[in-house]
Length: 570
Image (cartoon, rainbow, N blue to C red; front, top):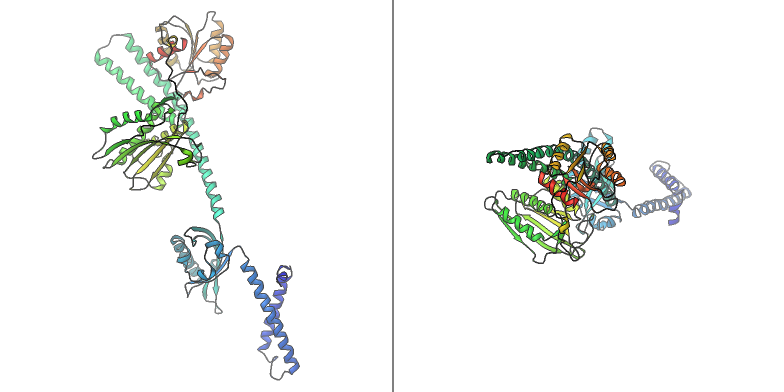
């Protein structure tokens, strides 16, 4: 019989049987089916009734077959009983309950509390709409979170309509529902990728802004610092006057630090990697911070004596820990404790896969935890975003800088927190593998006296070029000046003597410093190059295979320029 369910004409046959059976029932209630009927007629009618009864069983079996083999769950809910009165067998695959167990459940047993409240509110709204004659409320598709027998939550899409009795009164609901876990997973992944794209776009924007600010702003700072150094060297000044000059220098250094923070956020600040012990660096920071702890707060450091070395810029490491400590101190301003812990972490065993975007390797863990105010999940999700802050007077760059600096050296940062329960930041830094030799600077590379070499100075900022030229001349060098790359090549072409060094800005209109250096070296072999720029040395990509790239970041002092030039010339 089951093969008949698969026939394309089975539905038409079922409808024909139903119509005939209904017609017979109507005739049975009239005089057409009376006591005066002949026995032959009655026998014929009874035979027809038996045939239609069999057809009715076929119809019921047909629908039962469809319902019991549907992947979706079909159910009925009775308002008076306030429970399910039917659930198709597929409910076991969806929620782990048998149909019999489902029929003992109410909406509040089947749905999560939040979904149950929404469902009840929606039913009430639709009932009111139907009583007003709004038939569009008869059908609805919603998403609800349902409870599985194992305690998990199953997201479902549910299509429902109302059941009416013969008098038209609304008595219950019939629904069809399906599991949408995979759909939710895809939507969540899509949202995650969109957020990553937004973050990448934001970081690209910050990168462009940071680079532009660093280049222009540091050029102005270079003029201020350079002129200050020239004035200080030109006349004997009183102690009070010299103190004023030093205040100018301090202000310039502070402003340079601000641009450095922007560059760090954008991942464009010059790094000077070195091998060092994190414990020693943290101990120094803790000693400095101990005297600044607010109120009754405490600061403790728990170190692993056998901590692996790391390879990164030690100044950047100090900045990472400094920012985390400052945040923690702010969190315990009303009292509490801060703990810094270091230890070795075998990532493949202990933390394998904890950070999907980072290569798994042995790491040094630096953990900064506090018992302060903590953060909500919403805040925690944005805490590393540039310019995001919950403080009234803060730049919103601190933790963004931390994240950028850690990622640049191949590590990653995690955070655990809850409102009122404190916060824990964990910094994972790659372990430095193999033997490490700290090479000393050879005597031939140490700064010596100036020997009157010729330096080609190129910078598109007139003030910077003029002041730097005066510095170089005061050191005893012969200086050739140019405002851009093309002019520099013309000057070099007309100069008959040797040119020992090209001292050039990196970012210039028309031709950048790298291009100028290549062209000049092709014309004059052996020319040393020293780049000066307010931009990070990251732009000096070593795409020509050379590892001997010399860089001096703006703003630089007179003495720093002297030392660097002498060091490069040898």
